[in-house]
Image 1: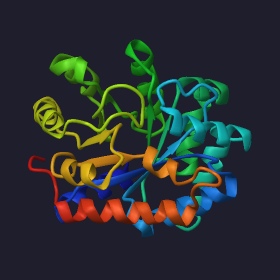
Image 2 (image 1 turned 90 degrees about the vertical axis):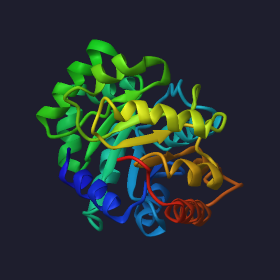
Image 3 (image 1 turned 135 degrees about the vertical axis):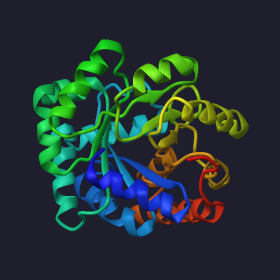
Length: 271
C-alpha cells in the first residue's frame, strides 16, 4: 500500500469511521474548474480523491458520469491532463491520497508502460482500471507495482469467494466492492445484501473494503458507512457540476453534507 493510503486508512480506523472517496472526472467542468474542485474537496470532507481519467467510451458509466467524460474530453481532457491536475493539487496538498480511476483505452492512448511511471511521479497513490480483467489485470498489476502504484482489485457480487480470493491475492491498497450492479449512478444498493456480501468478502482479504456504484443519497451513505471502510461517491457530485444546473460550490456543499452523515453514522462493524 502507498504510504498516504496506509496512513489514511489507519487514521479512519482510529477515528472509527468510514472514509469518503469523492470521484471527479479530470477536466470536468473544465481544467481550471476541476483543479478548484480538487483543492476544495479535502476541506469539504473528502478523505480520498478518485480522479477519473477522461474516456471517449465510458461504457460502464451511466448518463451522468458519461456526461462528465464528454465535458472533460471536449475540454482536452486525457490521462496527461489528469496527471497534470494531480501535480498541481500536490503543490498545496501532500496528505490526501489520490486514486487514478479509468478505462484501459485511456491508459493505452497514454502508453501503458509510461502511465504508471508518470502517475507515481505526479503523486498518484493507486490506480483502478474498471474494465481490466484476467491476465491483462494481473500483467498491469505487475507494471504498476514496479512503480509503487497499487492496482486496486474489483470485487463483483457474481465473482464469489473464489474469484475474490484470486483477485485479492497479493494485492494491496484496498478492495473496490461494487455495491449495485449495472452502470454507475444506477439503483440504490440493497444495504442488507451488501452488508452480508462484505462480511463474506472480509473472510478472504484483510485489505480495507470500499463500496461504490449506486451511492447517491445521504441516507444510503449513512447506512453503508457502518458496513464498509470507505464509500465512493461520484454520480451525485457530477450531477452538481452540470452546466446551467450546478456549480463547484454546490458540489462541495454536497460533499460536506454526505461526509457529515457518514461521520455521524460511525464506522464499520467489522474491520
